[in-house]
Image (cartoon, rainbow, N blue to C red; front, side, top):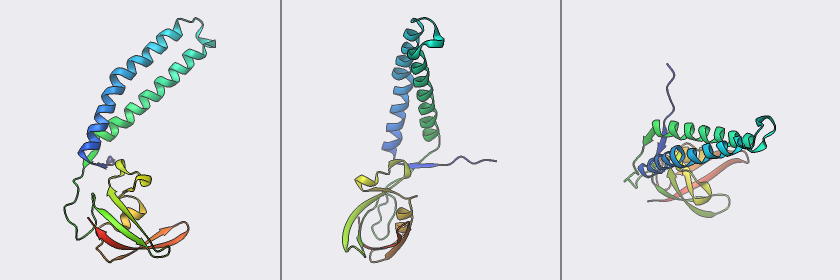
Length: 157
């Protein structure tokens, strides 16, 4: 039988998703229903752009609700790793780019919390997978479109 994918996230992220779901199902759904009601009052629905837009908005809303429900129902809560001897979810890792000779710090998180611009990388990303379970001093090689990138793990927090 088909097995649902699990979405790794922290308890905080799950709470945010549940809060967003409640908002969408209560407040936002009523707003969209009101938009549709108002658009219907304009008359002929075949040439009513307000009605078409409201129905499109309703479709987007229901799609978003279904997406968030799926995330919540298939959430896998991950706890931040307390260990600092190897990289795990929740670890803050300082790496040195061996080619550019520059250092950057990243936090390894579940896929639902990834934000590369903010330095939060998913454990499912190629870089995140390459770092998992590695130790301080290890050289990590990541296959990228530009070629193989090499990083040295400087610090794990």
